[in-house]
Image 1 (cartoon, rainbow, N blue to C red):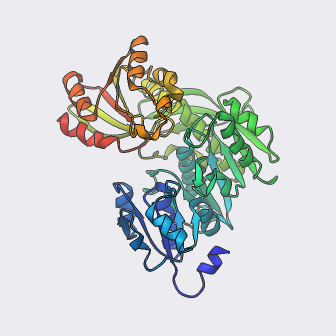
Image 2: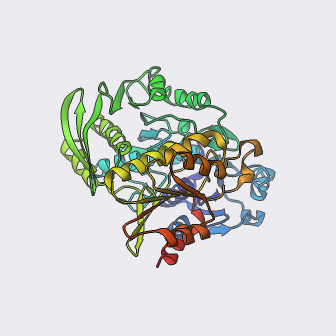
Image 3: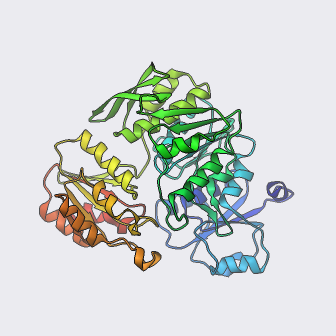
Amino acid sequence: MIEMNLQRDTKKRIYFLAICGTAMASLAAMMKAKDYEVYGVDEGIYPPMSDFLAEQKIPVFDGFDPGHLVPAPDLVVVGNVISRGNVELEEILDRHIPYISLPDALRDFIIRGKRSIVVTGTHGKTTTTSMLAWIFDCAERHPSFMVGGIPKNFGRGFQLDNGDDFIIEGDEYDSAYFDKVAKFLRYIPDIGIINAIEFDHADIYDSLDDIKLAFRRFVNLIPRSGLLVACKDDANTMEIAEKAFCPVATFGLAADADWRGAMIESAAQGIQFNVYKNHDLWGQISLLMPGEHNVRNALAAIAVADFAGIPKATILHALATYQGVKRRLELVGSVNGLDIYDDFGHHPTAIRETLAAFRAQHPNRRIWALYEPRSATSRRNIFQKQFAESFDDADFILVAPVHRPDKAPPDQLFSVQQLAEDLEKRGKSGNCLTVEDMVKFIKERAQKDDVIITFSNGPFDGIHEHLLNGLR
């Protein structure tokens, strides 16, 4: 109904409040492609989203000011980082300017009318979504998609095309300050993937049971004619899948998975493995990225692509040429024989699997793991013990101060000092340092052929540039 009203008569103006989030910026670009006049506002604007919005020729105000709302837009898309007290939001409410959440805008303006393929789970969403998009693209299905990262095969986090499918990364984070439900509940799924379910987003969920409830509601939305693709290796996922009204296809390394990965071999350029469908050999996969977690990501994508009728040869070719996502173990530079990688990991499971994958690929290289506790969950002490265990495959661990410690309850604050002590007990070298001191520390001790991997879900105070400059 909102879209119908907005499409009458003249070109309509849509304003994005907190436009620099990956999903917000991608939706803004898609709305511009649909011939709406799009503009927005944010603060602390930095690449890559600032560059992306500039390339899309979308005007962005830096810093919130009620004056930006004169003249009033026809509709405001409110990002989920916005809360009461924001000066522009208060102006919007006072003047009764129409507003909507990002997930509702996606559903009403973009997804509706297409087959919705929603990729969910605590880990692997971005990679699996972009894998699927690439498979469908290689199959000339002309998919539309939106993903919370930049897939290297596409060079941007969205595509708006004329095919029948919309493939989207479904986040369990809440939709908006006025709509405190998981975003993926708004995406009218026809096909759903659940890769794994763990506790996360401690700022909005009180327990794992609360998260499971959100996933139960998600599964309950998939029609009988659809499909749920569920990770057999994850007990929480299988518990949720038992309640599905639609067909369920399982995947994983477990012997009884419908889609099983086996004979996994690490190589210098990635990983190879066999795929079995209902115990019969289906094919051999080559990926340009390491790790059992990426085997699971690929198996989930294969299950959906096969269900959609995409030929095996196309799936094999697409996965062999899939280049991954920026900030997922991405090589950002080399200096004096040291390689520097960037990874988005901020949950102990993700960090552990990434380091294990790299260790299997490069057993003889010394690994430096640099970690910034930044996310809402990692700045709390919920996984205090698990974080110490997640760095077992690193040789040296440097931990930055907790980012914005004021955002966590004082009695729940993550202790970087405790992490360092726990690492020492495990026979690891753990140090708590600022970014500046990290560079000095590494410069004094690093050796040729060492590897530095940074873990943070934010810019980490520009650490890569500091490392490249400081180590030259």
